[in-house]
Image (cartoon, each protein chain N blue to C red):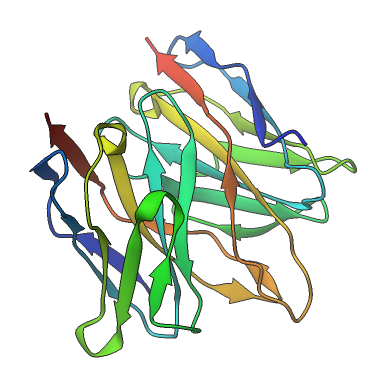
Amino acid sequence: AQSVTQLDSHVSVSEGTPVLLRCNYSSSYSPSLFWYVQHPNKGLQLLLKYTSAATLVKGINGFEAEFKKSETSFHLTKPSAHMSDAAEYFCVVGYTSGGGADGLTFGKGTHLIIQP
Amino acid sequence: DAGVTQSPTHLIKTRGQQVTLRCSPKSGHDTVSWYQQALGQGPQFIFQYYEEEERQRGNFPDRFSGHQFPNYSSELNVNALLLGDSALYLCASSLRMTGIAKNIQYFGAGTRLSVL
């Protein structure tokens, strides 16, 4: 069984300062890990994914995440926050079986607030 | 290239009624997964359809059922609606390729179901 824990329900940063959203996972197997973003009244958009290649993963809009197996963590970072980054962020774990993607397990989400 | 489309966008039902939600996958995708997202929570996996069969199921009662059509589109049916079924229902599509883990699910904007 797998689970995802997002350590902060809310994170508030000033525009132009770094962003850190923390995520720990629990898994019996080697998982695929994702970060999705959800803007108000919009669907989920994939930010980045880790699938056992490079441990530092670069995504869209300047976000990146580092997979640390020893710490079972997959924290999301961005060097400089922009007002448009304000949204709900989900850390997600997934597996493949029979060649296809299984149902995903989501964390509870971190609400990112950007102060002007 | 159309992404994942869902209909309707909003729906209001009363307790005990039945509801059907619809999803058209992204062009070229053959697998559809459904998720329930309660207010303030992360999405929870309901089930996944591939080759017109339910392939995987999350922890949801039999009141939740689905169908996939030959054109890969899908329906989610919920019988005997409860107040607690009020949520955003998300559809995600992916491509299942034997031996290759594509493992990326693309989400629609969702259907907001309110049960009164």
